[in-house]
Image (cartoon, rainbow, N blue to C red; front, side):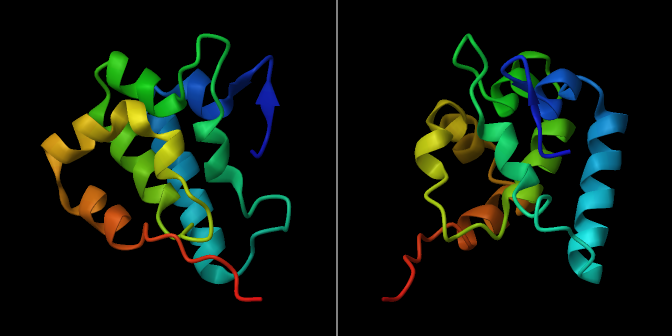
Length: 119
């Protein structure tokens, strides 16, 4: 899952297919909860922030295709990565997130405070 093909992540390819995004979301969160993620899978959600050749991240694609459920599921998968400064990679979708302010987005922002590693 943690792969980019031809500059597009799997999230880019399937942003318009809510069923596929739901399946990826469920499988990832279940594996994370059960402690069954392989080291190579831990950062899988971060691939949705990889820009395609047009500079769009998978969240942009979901919004352009009018798939708010896919967008919300992807945001949910990004929750819990406070060791990374993700918001700078998501500037194009911040206005939408502020406008929506649903529970998933608020939960993301609650945990999106960058916490640098202690030296």
